[in-house]
Length: 88
Image (cartoon, rainbow, N blue to C red):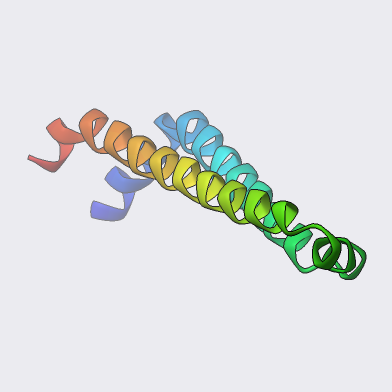
């Protein structure tokens, strides 16, 4: 019985969960792609010549991490507020 209720709820909310899942995957891919730039061998050779690039990449990584964290927290808050009636 509980499984049926949960399954029906999941099917009703499937589109919202799919959008949430795709957005989270995209945010994490952007974060890891940006961090992969910092470990690029050619870019590291260039950084040794110009110290400002290293600072910009470090700052950019921090900004991307903050944006991803904010997005994850706001999306979780949105889903919890939608399901507040079901939880209580």
